[in-house]
Image (tube, rainbow, N blue to C red):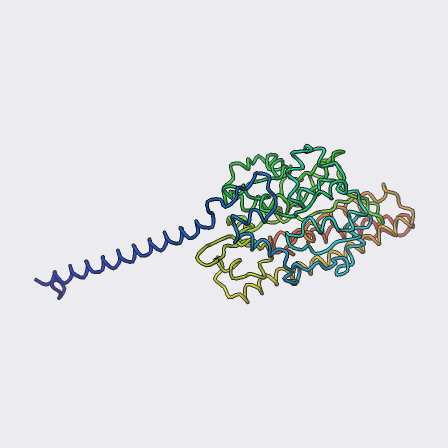
Length: 441
């Protein structure tokens, strides 16, 4: 008997043969997957050496995890400059001289360089001229040396933070290390810095309940954040009580009446923003999509048959295939062009904001010379503080806008507006003191 022109038996044979082929392919794929997982498991061997809980020397960890160690040691490699960053320690004060005036009376006006790789975290902190001109506290060690957790355990959190950095610097021998982010026996991600735990608790977040993907950002947020030193103990604190945006951070600081320095020329009560990569990232499409810091800066890679997270922590611009093309099926040249368009636009806004701030400072100085008091200049000084706070938030965030392009543009637009408002307020004081018509007359 035939069905649609074919004998039933022929159809049955075809189905059996097709099923056998599919089964064979399925078994082959399963065996391939098992073999791949077995290969990957070999990167976590039965311990060659036992790693102590307080072991901070990466070389010791490297005995058990040589592939990760080899990649981490590449953070001492100078891979050169990218258009707005890289690993070469050039002077940002020379490249962007407006910073000297904007930070007048702040140690960053003396020394501010492009940072090198994580290997140099302690070396560069010990050698910066900011240590010479400012009495930096031991709190700085939190992010610059692997010795921090043991020092905190030995000295106590308050004593560690307030002890002068120079009194402790001779005990520092390692910058970033495996122990900062990993539990030694299982390599599970962990948080070793109290300031992040405290800040997240204030936000109602229990870091012990974080997913592995969340931890791949939190381990970076131990250091790549805005911070300040609170009170006489100089306690390292993250200003997150109101939220993560610059507006939230400003509200936090205004609640405390906090200042980092008094501007040498205007007399404004100023804040120096540090490296708020985590805070900027929280406003991004990547964050909303569940992309972690490690996905882009430590993407997975192959070493033979083994898949590892690349511990050469660097700019994704130097590694677009692994860092970007995993999610974005776009040619490398198009990805690079997209990134540089964002960064170039942000850099242009930064330079425009710097010009506005410099003119604001000049106008406030002119008002001082005309006899203006702090009370006369109250509005102008507050706006100077607010404008520069926002410029600094984008300037000191190390992606030149890429971590959150729209937020960066919004913040700089507000900074420009506030700088011009401050300039107008100061001009009106000058006109009043000189008996001239007001600026809008």
